[in-house]
Length: 260
Image (cartoon, rainbow, N blue to C red; front, side, top):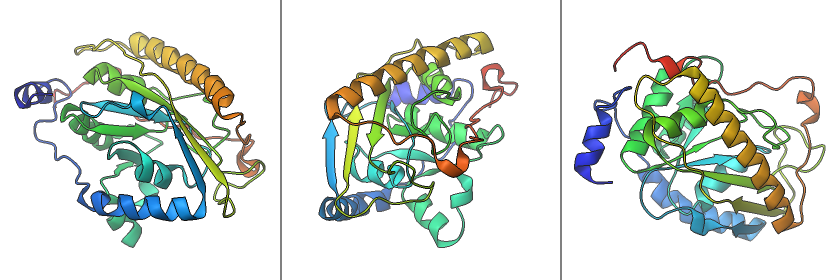
C-alpha cells in the first residue's frame, strides 16, 4: 500500500491518523530463537504459507485450541504479526514483553475501541493482524465466532486468511496444558477470503451477514485441513465444556457514533 493511500485510509471512520503503530522490534530478534526452540522440541509442519502475501494488509483468522497457539504463530507465521491477546495477560513482566513483541491487548467482554483502532492502524499501514474469532481456547471447530474479524475486513478491505492449528492441546487436555516433547503441530493456511470494503456507516445486518459468510468458510477450511493432515481437533476443554466466553471486539462497531 502506498504511503499516500495509507494516509487517506487513516482519515476514514473510525479514524486512525493519530494512532500509534504497535512496535514489534523485539519480535524480529525473538522469532528465530522461538523457531529454533519449537523445532528442537516438537515436530512443526506448515501448509499453505503461500496464501499469506509478502506485502499488504492481511488478517489471519485462526482457530484456538491450546496455550501454545499464540507463541507458535508468532514464531512461524510467514510475516511478523500483531495478535489480539486478552488484556489479562498484559501485567508485570509478561505484559511488558507482549507489548515489546507488538501484541495488542483486548478486552474480550466489552467494546474495546483501543484494540479496534490498533488493529485498523496496523492494517492501514499494510501489516498483518492475527485474530482468534472464537474468542477463547476451546474445541477449535469455529462453531461460533464474533463479528470482529468481519468488521475489520469490511473497514479495511484486507483479505482474511483462514488458519487451522492442530496438536497444541491433546484430547481431554486442560486449557493450560502443554503437549509432551516430540508432539506434532500442524499449521494449515487456506485461500484468502475477500469482503467488499464498506464505507461508513456500516449496517449491523451487513456485518452479521459477513460474519456468517466467514464462519462458513472457516468451517469449510477446517474440513479441508483435516483431510490434508489426516488429523482431528481435540474436542472441548473439559473444565470449560459448560460455558465458553466469546470475543466481543465490538458490540456496536457497525454503527460508529464518533468520527474518530
